[in-house]
Amino acid sequence: MAPVAPRSGDAIFANVERVNAELFTLTYGAIVRQLLTDLEEVEEVNKQLDQMGYNIGIRLIDEFLAKSNVSRCIDFKETAEVIAKVGLKMFLGVTANVGNWDAEGTTCSLILEDNPLVDFVELPDTCQGLYYCNILSGVIRGALEMVSMKTEVTWVRDMLRGDDAFELQLKLLKQVPEEYPYKDD
Ligand code: MYR
Image (cartoon, rainbow, N blue to C red; front, side, top):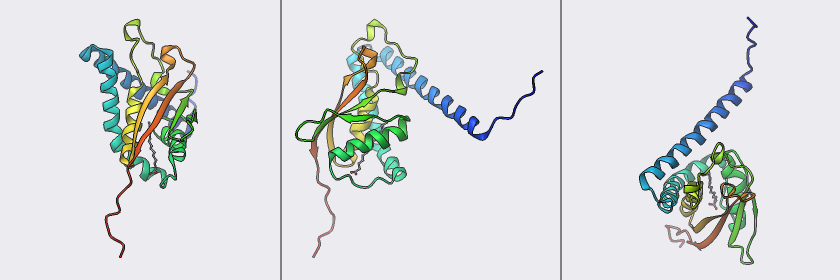
């Protein structure tokens, strides 16, 4: 029998990370599949995934702020860059490019060329209207709402629908000023 070479700690961690990522991807797929069975209409599944994401996002922002040490962003441009380069990296292991800004600086796109949520996924014809990754738009919407930014987050390109990338449009609808609870006298 060939001798078993001991594996370095790094190799074991890399393997554990890969297995965790695969488990995460497959678990998400199982959730989407279950929602399709339970709700039947893809529009309802889209809504439900977005709502689930929102519920995650409003909690996940605390972990993000605690772990990232990111301080207040000066404007929406900086916020978009933080999501693209820090937030997505922290929770999804990928980064995005920010582009397609409008003149007002309130609408932009996050463009992802890599999206671990869709590894192993192929949509059948019956799911054509499905926004498979809608949980992600909900997460971002929920997280931003907790830092006073009301946004609309929508998919404009989706590789599962035959597009060449994933493109998530972020539209800042309203920035609610945070109230300072004490009077300066
Ligand atoms: C601020 O101005 O208060 C900082 C705002 C930073 C918001 C970053 C939101 C991170 C959302 C993480 C998304 C992860 C998606 C998987």
